[in-house]
Length: 431
Image (cartoon, rainbow, N blue to C red; front, side, top):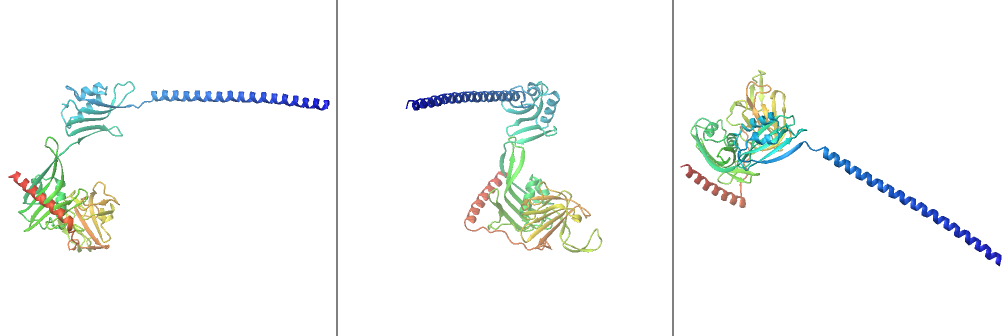
């Protein structure tokens, strides 16, 4: 019994010794690993601090060479004085003064603010001008800036306009264009006026001496009363060869049309002629070709006009092509719907933005009269295709426009009465 107890005590002694040694080893490993983790964290933290310090250093050193300056004009300031204050290079100062002088004298408006963008030199001396915007009136600024190649450009920008509704009228002695310019109507308004009446009147054959027109439209002026641009036509009237035609604008700025006194739209699928004041020089049908010398079907109608005369889209639609088309020279083809296509050939050049896929509005300028391709002189070859087959545009019977009914007709009558009152007021002012 005594021996058995002795053996058990020895076993317990060995077990406790083993447990003590194992615990010591475990504590040592944990302590060392903890130190290692702390060391890694400390190292990571130091590295992060170093990275932030490096970034700060480079951001301070690598700053933008451009500076935006807003300068408030003081009494006695001049362009030269202002630019010298911000250390602009002398040659650049003279360049800005020259451009500014195109639009105004050197007298500045105290209290107004000039926006300047400067490209700084390393020494902050001989800085360069990137952009210089300066007010010259209450409604206009001059902007002078460099392009990507460093070439200087300038322009006058109108910031505020004053609208005035005006009435213009005249008796036609020679041509609509001449009589309209004599009445101080600008060219863009004349083109729109011709577009409106282009569905009813052939300006080459229908106009007679002593015919008459009257128009009410918007004109925009700056604060000095200088004309800047024209706006919408509200009312247009023509007395042509004993026929009276009176039209009123109805709709909003994005979607409008012109209607007669009975509420019927003047617009048809296609205009009678896509060019104002041109002479019909070669009709549709068989003819002796002026260059080829043999009889050949003429699939369109030729209108002779001076080179550069604007050509209008005779109907709304999508540009199917705008490119060189061999004997036709520069050609535009417009698809109006599933039935009608029109072709315009021998153009000098295309109007800005005219390309395949562009949506086009009736009366919009698509190009200019020329003599490209197989041509003996400046003219427009105009062709109408019905279901792919060329037809005589001058004999084509086109569907009439929309007729206003119900609530729309009532709204039109209100607008028409307002316009008639406005006309009476404007006529009274002219007397």
